[in-house]
Length: 236
Image (cartoon, rainbow, N blue to C red; front, side, top):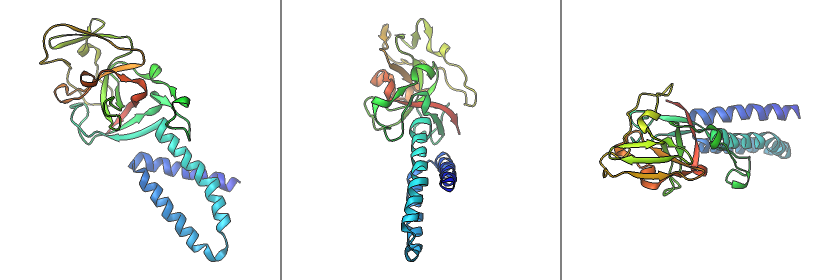
């Protein structure tokens, strides 16, 4: 059994490293399939099928489950594919996303809301950069800046947006490890009368730093907490 434990631990490390460095987990699965097929081919005449199968089940399955859990619940990597967050994030930048700051899920039940532990109420703060599914395009992934929390009241007059009497530009600050960014005037170019919006429970208001080239909460409203994939922790 100790041999299987060592194999599983080593596989967990290698698979997690591959996931973080390359973010092409399907390649890892295909590569693993080729290796397993090769092992079975060379062991055909030695009658080692059951020994190999037992090793795969005891060692590889837990490692595979661990890495899936790591990707869905702890940490993941995404590539920025638009200019909506410039100059903070440029197209082709990669971001490390801490998923546990949004929610925790358990292996085998990654898509079940019954076992989803919401963490966004604890970890998410003003000015965080987050990764999310937009409400009108749930299959797509966007990177935006969080500027409104549940129960906030957003008011806008002309080119200025305010949250509880404070300008959005005053709520933003420089984040360590990221580039500088523009101050935001969310409704620039819109009509000048004052508008007010109350953010519902478990919803968040997001904007792109490149306010003139961004689809965000101005287009599809606040984002439900369950649509947030995580908080950006690192950029390169």
